[in-house]
Length: 218
Image 1 (tube, helix red, strand yellow):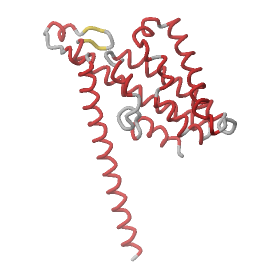
Image 2 (cartoon, rainbow, N blue to C red):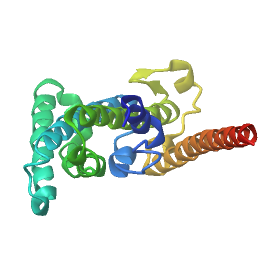
Image 3 (tube, one colour):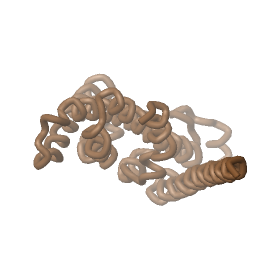
Image 4 (tube, rainbow, N blue to C red):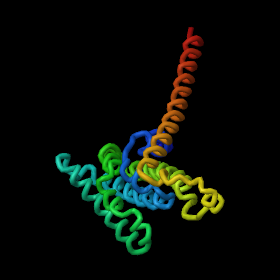
């Protein structure tokens, strides 16, 4: 598989949040601010990168019957590292993410990539896949966080937008669970529409090329 295609899949075509609908719980729970999205995304990128590389490295050693418990153990090791570092150096973010930080261990995105990709691909490709999927997840939840924070709290990355707050047009619903579902749903619809439109355009172009080749051969 081409390296560029792996990156494209992770960020857009197979975006874990909007296309594969994985990691929904942290997406809805911690995206009340953009900074929470970046912090969670950064943690997931690190765990995805390290766990993918380790699983790929050990793919011929881990017995098939115990592969899932082995993957969980590998993932849990790197999640523990992230948790300890954040607790030591980024305590406020550690508190903001709360329970969802250790729950990265059972995040569907990480386990799915370990089993579906890293276990059957070389270490370098697995590393690219981990970073790409993590980046796709980070961009998605950060975008949702920006929208919810802007309309719900009248701020941008923690910086208050005074005219917006003073005007009284901020809507608390955006930082509530209902607002999370609303923003997530609209974003998912938009991304799927854009990707579907592009796929349809590419398919049409391929058909036209096939017709031209057929006419030349005739």
